[in-house]
Length: 188
Image (cartoon, rainbow, N blue to C red):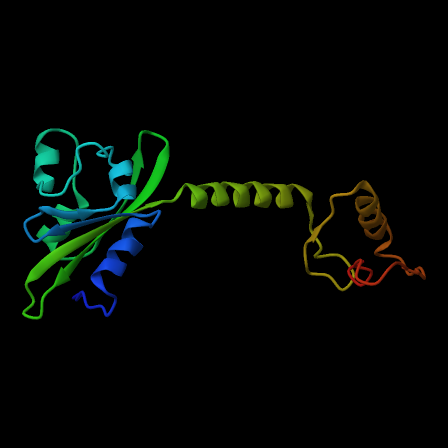
């Protein structure tokens, strides 16, 4: 997929947008030489003091600072490269390097974006915990009148209602179920 960098945004505004982003941005030329980094990228790569502009990404692999470079892989493979990465054993990142080509199809730049995905990881963990909790309190409803659905009953009172319904389900009693609107009388 060919990416062409075209914009009507004035360069100064474009740079301000990138500089103010919480995501890290690094732009390298077709040889892998860094031409731009924002502060967020430098923070993630522990290069606040030295900066990276003017350095080839291969230098960081050769000196052992990096094991691999998404930007160099995107240059070599001429395609977008996406990779999860854990920095300092605590911050999960998604690193995406996208090559941009000129009108003649020549590679001009690679834009690398780093995104902190810890919020997504936290959200996934909370969702997994919620699903475990729901499963713990789920009551199969296949034999319930009008059922076929599963129910979640957390309170002791609601569990007693379902237990009683289960006990009398095969008899023919007349039952009056009353309560406020929207409390689930039709479910029982």
